[in-house]
Image 1 (cartoon, rainbow, N blue to C red):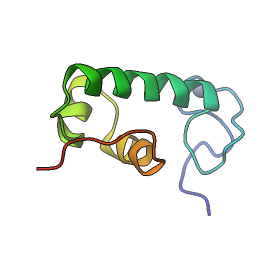
Image 2 (cartoon, rainbow, N blue to C red; image 1 turned 135 degrees about the vertical axis):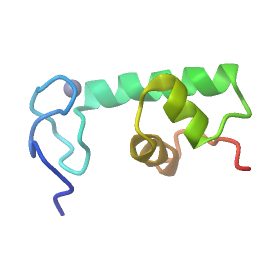
Image 3 (cartoon, rainbow, N blue to C red; image 1 turned 180 degrees about the horizontal axis):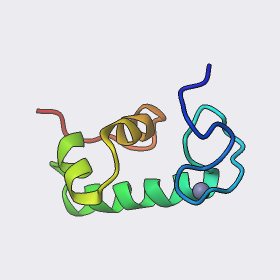
Image 4 (cartoon, helix red, strand yellow; image 1 turned 60 degrees about the vertical axis):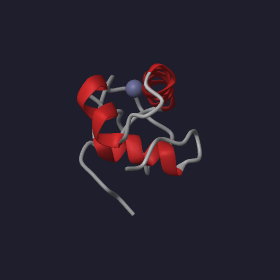
Length: 76
Ligand SMILES: [Zn+2]
């Protein structure tokens, strides 16, 4: 089930994380989500690549948020 390195610790802040399937703790994941959501609000036609380029968040992370049902983005 492990997808990674730094198992048990947040990749961003180093705190212990609860969700072992994520590389980030809940707090960092929420902050990341807010960043993506804000970018999409300002750029409703952005795709995952655009979001990644402008936010610095990896596409894997963005797709993960999208698959979580948090929001949708433009597909082209
Ligand atoms: Zn964190």
